[in-house]
Picture 1: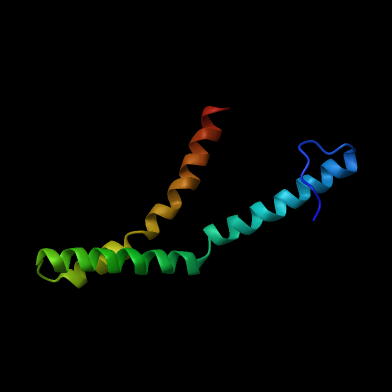
Picture 2: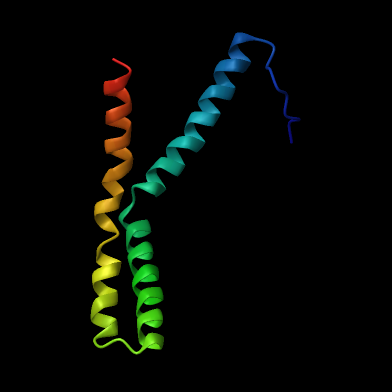
Length: 91
């Protein structure tokens, strides 16, 4: 394995390092926006909310939990709105 250096010496090495980093970032970005991730989040939040509400003895606990699980989807728009507001502030 190639030893990590803080600053590649040549322009070609710098470009290669940037392209490698961009590929990793693109992979993470694709995962963040994937329907699979959103589904896992909705299921986990719904299950956790359902268990909590059931332990508290809430009426219709699992129905309320489905609402909580489905409610995660609108929050995926928040980063886009935040980025837009930052762009507007910066001119």
